[in-house]
Amino acid sequence: MLGRRNASIQHPPTLDAEMESTLQQIVDLKLVESGEKERLKEVLLERLVECGWKDEMKALCREFARKKGRDNVTVDELVNFITPKGRENPRNQSTYIAGMWTA
View: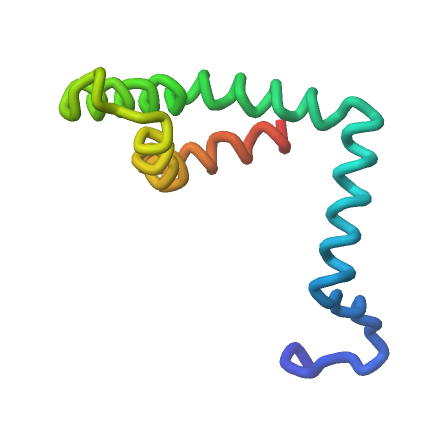
């Protein structure tokens, strides 16, 4: 019985790309209007600081600037260098940050 699917279960319809984009815009607007977007940004930044992510990114930027020569670094180069590293989550900060939603 465990392997059989119940035909009476209603699955939600899938969203096409346009509907999904519209839904994201509506959610974003509601978050901005309610002030929750700003509060969520503050909480996220707080958690990133707590887990050391912000300090790690700052240290990587300083190292990059030191190697390249402080006067030879552009903002675009720095952004192109640090963005992939910030998204890597080498110490699995995403797990730590996700825990804030269950706390």
